[in-house]
Image 1 (tube, rainbow, N blue to C red):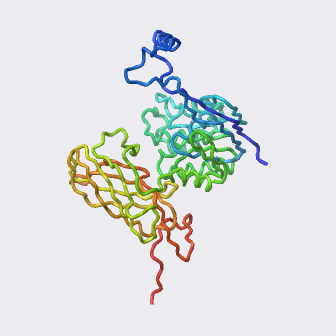
Image 2: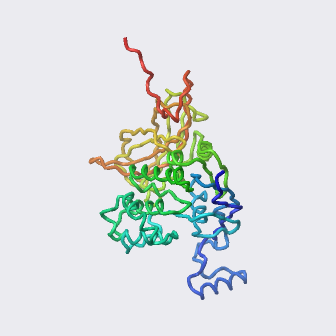
Image 3: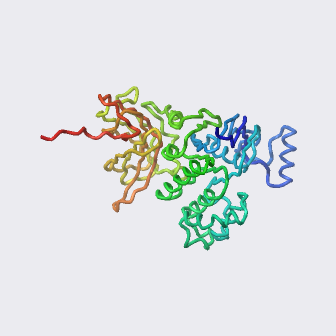
Length: 421
């Protein structure tokens, strides 16, 4: 039987919200004096709520064991507690309550370039990072050529890493973590930076680490394909709590169902915006979407989806277009549709548009729709004005006499084969 290498027992991690200190001893004493006298904090800015005493549970009474050779995936929405758990396992921070024990050295890569000093060369950082992981100089030297070769960094190994691109950073950092003799490898969504070829190379290496070398891998990712490819077990976290621990496919199903509250036909979009647009001043906003003629968003395979979208413009817009992207419930892209120009909008204008989307050839199942509004100039350059992910969820019911195997055959069903005369 496999040996237990990690034991997490009733772990809770609590953070304190807001600023912890006033920045000076005088300010802290003023705040403390006001608090014990029941007065308003003199260092609080006008209109700023005092949230210093509020607490946030990043993890709430989580327990699990990990066996030697396990490849454990940890999935969940943003803010579910995944990265916090890996930081606790890597001893970057300590739990508020509970106990974490492990048997063996841990090599962790929690973000691109963790443990790298920008002024040192790649060669020097390999030795530095190895030393941080508890390796002797001889151990690092014996693996050095293998690390450099895997990272494809022969030409740049003696260049200061401050001149590396993010892709070069992640290649070298992953190579160090994967090749040094640690019993446990902890990875947090680091493969998202590398190119596709290197991602597959890394996944292959991580598989070898577990299968051939008997080492243990803990892997956090939002890419369900890599979770499927690598992991033999999966934990789902939701708002700091463990809601599932077991089979990978069942875990992905549990994670996907977190979005099923969008399974409706009249949706308020006014408070929703894709992350890459949150810091951009809005020129236009999608306010509401209705799936016309439906009480529930269920469609036959050849049935179009008629949509009514309410828009508001905050500036003059010459040409705007719509794009719908369809993803599976595991967030894998399936296809997209783009509109012709819907014309222009004037500043302050509110407009209701109706259009038809025909996702024909999709097989049975639920799908996420991403809706983007963008403008395009005469040179074909476009810029997103607003985007919602996911905007709505719809279900396709095909009911053909052949049960479609979506996992093996894909989510698009082409026309049936015809016998030629």
